[in-house]
Length: 235
Image (cartoon, rainbow, N blue to C red; front, side, top):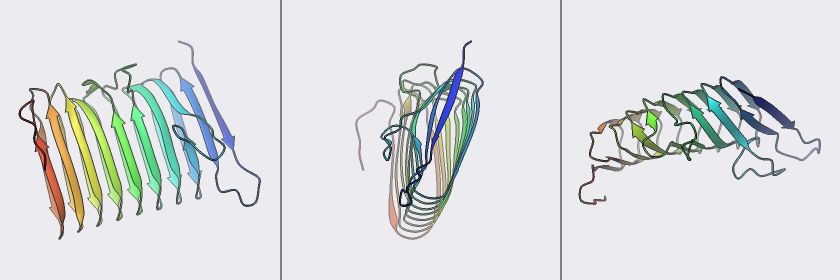
């Protein structure tokens, strides 16, 4: 199998420029990619990348290992992963960072059997992760560990026996999760903090879903909907 992997590092030399940029385009199986950025205003891109308009983060292949570390404020990780059975570790330390990623939206590899871990320390961050379409996330193991306040986490998974576990410690956090597909999924949220907003929907078509939420703190709104092709409901 042919492989190609290249990274462009774009580091502006102008004194007032804010962004360092990393451009990654990889194709082929069993890649091992480790990327780290230190500082603020950096981009690993990516869909909707700005600054020098670099594109993309585009990773294609099966059984890859991806390790991303962004340490600082106002950083962005943006892009697409077309992967099957991949291991991903994403670490973000700082405030007002953006993580926006989708995995295999077009059923290129299937997005099965992946192990994904997202660790966040900081406040005011925005995280969006959409994994697979058409019930392709077979046995996905997705884990979030988030420490901080005023974070927004949005996740969508097309289940095929996948698991989404969130461990969140902090107040004023917002979680929106949508799980569907054709085989049962499991969602577990363990939370400590006040003024939370949770909107969780599971609707595997004519199948079983499992959900557990443990939250300690005052004030907030919680909406949970489970629907296996019944009458439409809302909160």
